[in-house]
Image (tube, rainbow, N blue to C red):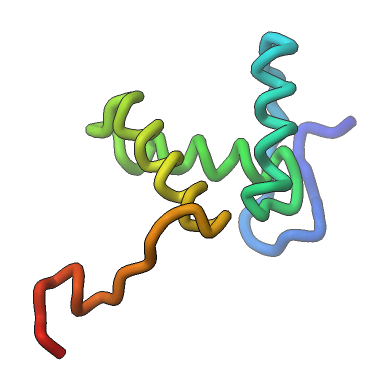
Length: 91
């Protein structure tokens, strides 16, 4: 396999890397990426890495809370609020 991934995605070329994960973590990833609307395991992992790099100030607990809220929103398990309700505007 070459060091540059020329997938269907447009944009900058990608480089393959190898990482070692526990089987349990890989199973968690595989159980999550489809449910969360990603097209592939790689897309899910890239997005997680982007978030970690873009927001280094967030703690692990912060990411867990964000993920839980996002999951609840996507699955309809949470209440929806309008922008106005969140900002406290009366419309």
